[in-house]
Image 1: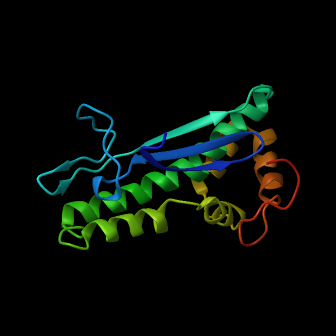
Image 2 (image 1 turned 90 degrees about the vertical axis):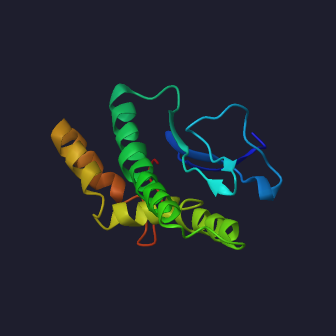
Length: 165
């Protein structure tokens, strides 16, 4: 939607999508009635929130669907939630008040959320995504092996280099 500031991390089997309503100063407005899903300007104050959507593509085997859901949720969406919490804490602390506040907020969004799929995959490749590793381990040896093989699809900077994504 044109009203939203958004990004998408897309793979061959699934994707993670994060979206927020862009701020009134940027020429956009909210989508109607007050909702906890969006930022709203209220007497110069901003209310934090966003939504995360995970999509699995049709035609996946049950095994690939289970693995891809874990990948999208625990490699991407979980990291996004941590970064959104950081922004929320900054809002509460008043970091975004004042005449430059909206610019700082937009900069934090860009730095913490947008186009960060490679960062997430770098953490995965380097073994720093323990929730996904534990998820795979709990599902059994087949998934634990798949986890180790899938990590090899990304180089040390998190860029996809082969196999299936």
